[in-house]
Length: 318
Image (cartoon, rainbow, N blue to C red):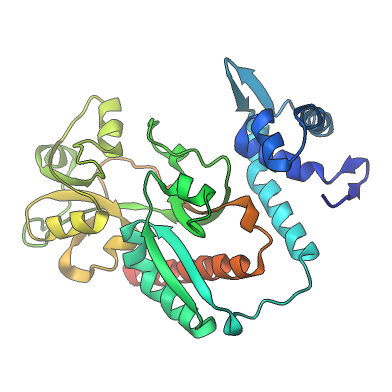
C-alpha cells in the first residue's frame, strides 16, 4: 500500500474502509487486502476511533453498517479513485494502438438503448478493440470473479423490495452510472389516455421474468397496499415485453431509457402507483482498478451512457 498521512490519520485506512464497507466482514476484507484478520480488526478499530462511529455492528452472524458507514461509501470510492488518478503509473495507454477484446455484461434493454453508441465510440477511439456483449444474469458475479467479464451494468437492488435473488456485489467496485425511472406503457390503439389505479388493476399485464414467474417488484409493492393485478404474459427481456405490449391490449412497467427508443409504437404514461427510481451502476473487480486499458474502457462506457441518457431525456421532454 501507499503510505500517506493526513494529520494523524493514515490514509491507507481508506483502502481498508472501502473493503470493509463492501464486504461487511473483517475476514473477507482481510482476504481482499492481503492482510491478516487481526491486522484488519486493528485497522477497523482505528477507523472507528478516527470517525467516532462504530461503522460495522454485529447483528447475529452478520455485520451491519451504521448510517454513518452508508454515508461514507461513495466518498470513500471517490477518494480512492482520485488517489488512483494521482498515483497511477506514468505509462501511457494509447487506445488507438490497443487491441484485444472487451466483454461487457448488460441487460438487453441497456444494449438496445446504448449498445450502438458504445460501439460507435469504441470504434472511433480504439478501433483495434473488439466488443462482446454478454447477457447479465445470475452467473455474472461468478464470471466477474473469474475474469470472464471486464465490466457489468447492474441495478442497485437495495432500492427495490427485498428479494433473495439479489446478487452479492460486495467483492466488486461499483460506480454510479445513471438513475433508471419507470414508465407505464400500452399500445396506442388500446390505450388513448392514462389509466387510473382501478383501471390499471383491472387490466392485464406483461412483465420481464428470467424464469417465467408471474410476479415482479411492482406486484410486491402492490401487495404492501393490499392490492394485486393479473400478469398474463412474461418475457425474458424488457425488449420482449415492449413488443408484446405494442401489439396487444396489455400494460407494462418498463425502464424509461428503453421506451424512449420505441418512438410512437408505445404510448407512455406515468405509473398510477409510486415506484422507486433505480440507480444503475458500473460493476468491476478491484483487480481492474489501476489497469489503464480498463480505466479507458469503463470511462468510455460511463461517458457514452450518460450522454445518451441526457439526449433521450431531452427528446422525451420535447
